[in-house]
Length: 285
Ligand SMILES: Nc1ncnc2c1ncn2[C@@H]1O[C@H](COP(=O)(O)OP(=O)(O)OP(=O)(O)O)[C@@H](O)[C@H]1O
Ligand SMILES: O=P(O)(O)OC[C@H]1O[C@H](OP(=O)(O)OP(=O)(O)O)[C@H](O)[C@@H]1O
Ligand SMILES: [Mg+2]
Image (tube, rainbow, N blue to C red; front, side, top):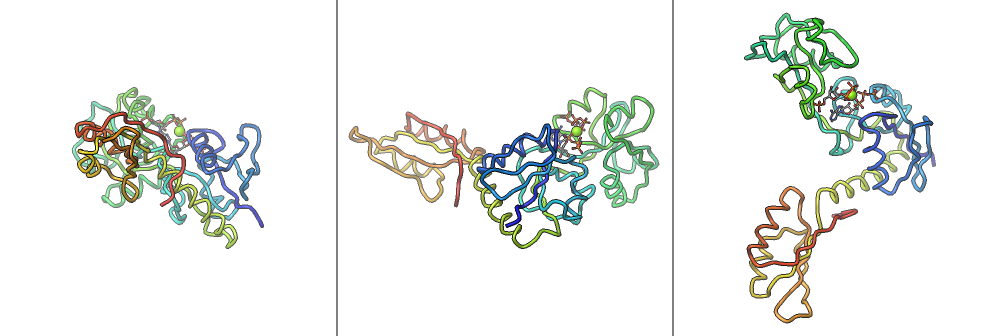
């Protein structure tokens, strides 16, 4: 069987997390510092280490079957390309920003302005929808410096913490899109490779679900058991086992990271004690 070919960013912000998610799926690959291509151990997969910005074209041409890529790049250069799973890392947004000293109240304020960006299609799409025309200057890096050197009136680039904007005296005025890393699929993927993709997707979803949840064990007095169980979510329902000491039970359950601290506070107030929290490696529904 031909292995599935996956593109991973050669170096940069996506590289490490991309290799980590594959590793968590039980797929180990040598890191790509000195090589452009590697075979996975224990899974029918070949990895090509590529520039993020080149990946949409490789997917389109069928040079690779799948890729881990930022959604922002797909929106810019690969709108025809299907996403199979959102991966939950490298979260950022693509935004328009202006010098802090410039007043801004609505999108019309950008009419006729010079905008520096590495995302011309994304900006054009946004401005066209608003019926605005602007003069785009396409630059590949250090976009945030453009207004300070007189190259542009505004910029459009990736924002995450906002510290790059802050350092350059810029303010974010419009969010064009939210982005995270995704698993994207070539329109030319073959049938056998679709089968491998389904296996991979199943593993990725189990890993992502596990990352999203914690396994929690606690001791509960039997006379408050009902109240404690009512507070707890679980995959089906919590597990209750008797302790060696009379009148007490051990309660086990799975709690979503987002609700985790809130639930712990509530069960503690209801009399639970000796609470243990463990990471989950894989979670299959
Ligand atoms: N500050 C950030 N915080 C979170 N995610 C980010 C940030 N900057 C970029 N990203 C995401 O990571 C992806 C890769 O960014 P990175 O800067 O490593 O690559 P690049 O220089 O754009 O691409 P290439 O691999 O083509 O050189 C971006 O497309 C975006 O999805
Ligand atoms: O809001 P922040 O947390 O400051 O992140 C945003 C910055 O991060 C990215 O640059 P990166 O560091 O990847 O450098 P690059 O321009 O060389 O890609 C992006 O292009 C912004 O400049
Ligand atoms: Mg970057």
